Each structure stands twice: as C-alpha cells, then as structure tokens.
Length: 156
Image (spheres, rainbow, N blue to C red):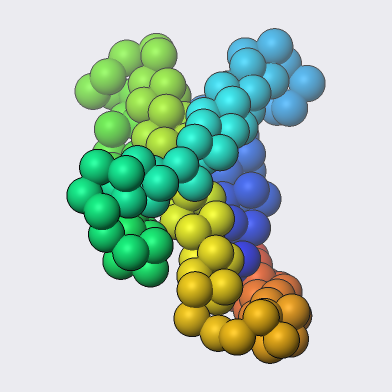
C-alpha cells in the first residue's frame, strides 16, 4: 500500500526539479537539492518513535498509538499539493525551488514514517505464525502497484 507513493516520490521528484527549474543532475545546486530532499526523508526514522511516545504519555495500547501516529503522518503528505504553486519563480524569485524541495521532503518523510508504522501494525493485528506471509503478500502487491503507478505516471 505504501510502495507506490514512495517510488513516485523517489523517481519523479528529481525529474520534476530538472524539468521545472532546469537543473541537471551534474550541477552542484541540483545535487544539493536532491541531498536536502533525501536528508529530510531520513528524518522519517524518528517517525517510528512517535507511537512509543504516545504509549508512554497516554498509556494507550500499541495498536491505538500506532493508529494515532499514522493519522498525524497521513496529514503531512497533503503538503505536497502546495509544492508547485509555492515554487513559482515569478512570485518567489530565483530561490523558489527551495519551497518545493523542502515541502516534498517533509511529505516524503511523513510518508515513510507512516509506512514504518503500517508495517508494525501487522504484528499487532495477526498471529505470529502468519506475519511473514501477510507481509510477503503485501510486499508483492506493493511492488506490482508501484510498477503500475510509475508506468501510469510516465504516460501522463
């Protein structure tokens, strides 16, 4: 369920930056932009900690804490809708490309935080003897879905 969105961010954001702002991947500015984008995404590692914080502060069970954290993380990728309007060079000047990079980076980090928690939910919901099978089926479906989403996006 999460793979298609992640691979979309991973493969199409550099193409977006190149097409809209004219940066090729061999320029220092483009390399810096891509580095910042993926550095922000690395913050998603801390997203797996939020359910633990919720459990410790409220005493909720792990499943409820994960659902609350996932709801919070699900709101942040909506910021990506503002990436293109805020990246308008005529309105925001020559450094307008930083707005979409930061916004998309935060959206990608939140998506990865959500993703880390959805994989943990399987262990909360199903018996231990079925977890590997369920995750395997989900991973296969995610891979196929990712392929189809990226193929469809490329055709647009």
